[in-house]
Image 1: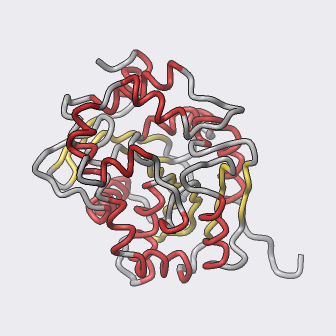
Image 2 (image 1 turned 60 degrees about the horizontal axis):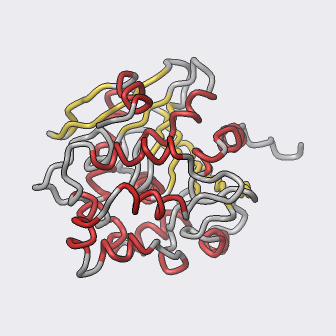
Length: 296
């Protein structure tokens, strides 16, 4: 059963049919462009953005949604979960918003959906202008990351057994390990997140959705190339205590894209938007700020 806080979040959005599947979508504001598109991570949902969004200006146009297989969206067993499909869904949701200019904010798995959009933009395949991006704490350079024990088990031959034996108690332990000592996972947050994972009643979907890590290996050239060559304004923010998307990942991206602006968050770990939403909001303001004119 969904917690009261999650039920409140659900009332703030709606289920929309997108590309033949039901997705939970939350839209807000109608202010000046660009539209802010928020892309969440694994294994959570757009619920991760709630406190950050509460800090944003009320007239700021933004949209977030639960990827297929996550949170309040449908979790079909007959679907092949790919990041390309999630990117297609993001494009359709943006199209419905009528936005011509879009700024993307991506965390964890959402950073790879963002880099797929960047790759499409490089090839002139997007129906809108992708004018900027803020990416944080995503294992975009997978060879430099350190996946959790749960992620490694889900990807391996013991994945089906691990899924069947998963429990709220085990989830709390695993999920709590990727929060910082300064901002530990609260019991309320853990309950919220678990209720979203088991919503719909089929936990086996988690094993299917982690397919995105295989894609990070298969599409290395495409997505690393987008990080390197995309001409838009890219900013990185990073929880420096992240045990998964470690500092080594950040340094690797800096080598791939020399001079990329980086906002280091020294006391935060893998979920900065939950641990300290005001710091991510400030990072977003910095990323959205116009570049200084030459000579000033």
